[in-house]
Length: 559
Image 1 (tube, helix red, strand yellow):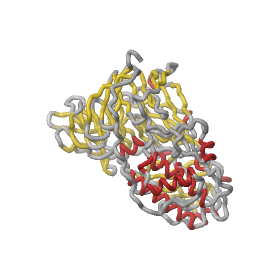
Image 2: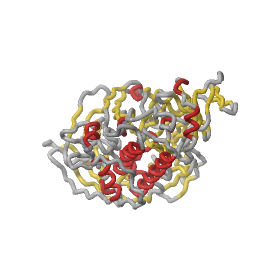
Image 3: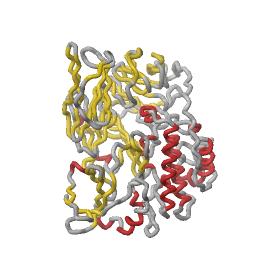
Image 4: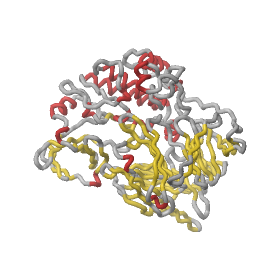
């Protein structure tokens, strides 16, 4: 596709440049520039509105820059700055994400202040955001910057807003103004602190979010219960907690506090030892130094250290390092990226392994490490010589470079608006499956294990959970959809027997088979299991990590 900028520069956009598709059109990326092309040129933002938006001068506000023209000289889109290596803001909400990335309450508070300062800048230009929802922000992967996107929908002096998500709409506002923006800001920033929409949770009488928003009954109300996977309210600074109560509970519309008070450091949650219940037998295996993040192939990773069989091997080189063990000599290997350069360290010997390999993202699947580099997906293989270890990248699949996300055990690809998943059930093997149910959604999180794929995706202000079960060679599948869930971490494990254990957003343990077509589903609510537990599999055994302790869990014979 050929297009032209206002200075007559010719731009060619190809399938490889595709980034994402939305309701209005598609976004392509070339270098440091993103190109939004409208599906219907009649929806093109007026040039006069582009001029009014040019008053937004902060560099973290990704506003439209230049008009794109088709060969017939019709305005069909615009350019903007491309933000690389960023998370959607909502991906920061789950507690497990914060533990994996060492995202502290102090850093979250700084991001909230960044959001607050830029909203104030926008208001100073006589512009309103109106649709101030969490999907319209990105956060740099080092958490040092917060970016405003979808700026073309803002309300400027001459043009009304063109979007508003129900989850942030002020039910008590008669018109859009700075006060309604600050209400939306309260909704989004509260989620940044706690991980839950302030009008979600459960209430015996007010059963919908809309009803609680109209009645000013938020999760701060003692009559509302929230999932245990959310963060405690005391991570919010006192002055901000007072402001949230005034806005969310008392119905006041006030600008947020101006102070820069430090957030309270999240205290370690005290977990009572649990030996079981009438339904479960829970056996303690070992206690480690810090919060347990993962356990696979007898390797246990905490926030600070790596353990094999409960014995410390070494410290974790960086929060996003991937840890595996070699097949022959059983050496523990750490792999991570510094910039785009692959780093490999043999933790068993303390020796750095030379790796002339470059990539952009890493992921794990059943103890194997995969890497995305441009359009290539490769499996990292380790060649064990008598006195030397070599690392190589073996190509297993090809993807669109800008439209592919790596998650735990799966690569999700948006192919010009159609979603495909890439699975890696064995070394050197890659299967792709078309997932039409996800079209029109924005994928927030995903995880695949032993023919089960769970995806959390967003549409129209709500988060839906999709539970896929695949047949042989991933040729077909069935799917169960859980609508409008609370955004928590995807928490499930599949045993070698095919039994899947899944903790849902209501602190219930779901048990079902990983076989496509199986109708069996058992849902257990038991105080012995809560949303703070992390589920893992060890062959035919189920494990849970609770804080810094690993347990084995089994059904009670009397349960």
